[in-house]
Length: 252
Image (cartoon, rainbow, N blue to C red):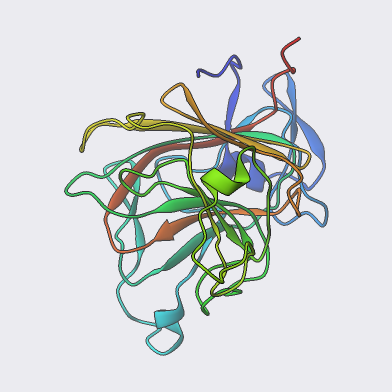
């Protein structure tokens, strides 16, 4: 899916503005970031501008005891890179609702695990690591799965797509069946090639496309707004685009 919007605003420019709607390039831009209320974007905003990590904050538990330890997230050759270790999350300072998020990513060296978490709130809410949120999986071979983290969402064919072991219940806490399988096989690009993931959060509905394929759709989410987070979860992952913008009109 390609963006139909021509105006793209770097987050650094948005952060420098006041926390109100301001004119930018002839269009109105609603500033995100640390506003008290979540932002519904009015134009496309580059959450990553290819230069720095302005507007993001790392939450890496290992840094609690080793504040001068190695970083988990860096900017390299114009790309945002999750180095995989130490494990943790890179979290936006701003909160968002009703948006279209587009992420282009790849595993440059070997297959691995990562994810983009939406509607994130309480940090380290699960296993003293994962923020309360709904994760859209990027793990090689499973991209597009949902993992619920102290939140929940409903999909069609729940018995088939949300497997659970004997005695296990659907839920979002430790020990619960938290994984919801995606809809397709073969939607991911080969190792080293760029994948395009689009996530539309519309009210309490979340819809995900990967490289143009519809890979997941859920309704009745327990949350409709929050921060966005990228994971460091063991493998190196490169991001060349992280953009958020307004929702397109619903198809008739």
